[in-house]
Structures are given as structure tokens and as C-alpha cells.
Image (tube, rainbow, N blue to C red; front, side):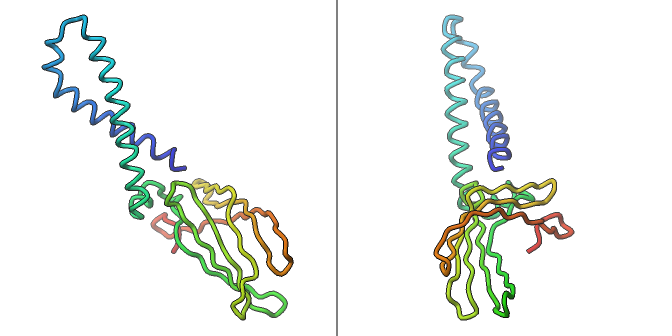
Length: 171
């Protein structure tokens, strides 16, 4: 998801920087002999690649540091934070805590389930995550270690994302 939104931003910024850079250099480039025009074109291509790489690295660094930027770039696909839930099974109240992290550009989900006495019953982490912003669905496969049964299981979670009137996921 990040690459789909991030690449056009970096390409647009590169085009803008190169346009203004080359427009400033144009008077100097007109004075070059025709035999050096290929060198100028090669230099422009190398400069474009360097500017693209520099802008991509800078924006990725900012993306990792700024939650606000992640929210802006990911839009409706921004799901970061902690979810807490509970359910009752066989008369026992069980609690779940799930953490959603998108700092790397990928969505990573991890969670734990606790008994009413506070002991950890299970822990899980996502293997693959998909956020469908058209149907407003979160789908992820996970690997779960269930401690009382001493086994690892795989599963698939499908959740509807409920939005506030602003169009953003509900808090």
C-alpha cells in the first residue's frame, strides 16, 4: 500500500526539483558545444536518479518518524495503535490486546490473549496483511502460539473497518 502512494509523491517531487534545477542551469547549458550535449543529457539522467534516491530516502525517514505523515500518506488505510477486547468463554472472561504498526510501511499486527487472572494464554503475529480501502476490510493471516495446548496454529482474520463520519477509521 505504501509503495502505491509513495512512489507518485517521490516522482512528482523529483520532476519539480529537476525542472527548477534545469531551468536555472539552462543559460549555462545553451553555451555548451553540440558535442557536449550528450554529456549534459547523461548528467541530467544521473542527477534525476540521485535526486529521486535522495528524496525517497528523506521521505521514508520522515514517514518512519512522523505518525501524522503516515496518516496522511496511508489515508483510509491508516490503522496504527492498540486494540483491546474481551469475550467470555465457558464462564471465564478473556482479554485480547492487539498492536498495529505501520512505521516500516508494512502493516504488522501482533497480539496476546490473557486469562482473567492475567496469565498469557496465547500470542500471535501477522504473516500477511491486506487493507482494502474500497470495501473497508482488514484481512490478515497470522501464526498463533497457544500456550495451554502447546501448539502453533495458523489462521485468517477478516474484519470490517467501521469509519467515523469524517471517513477515517473509528478510534
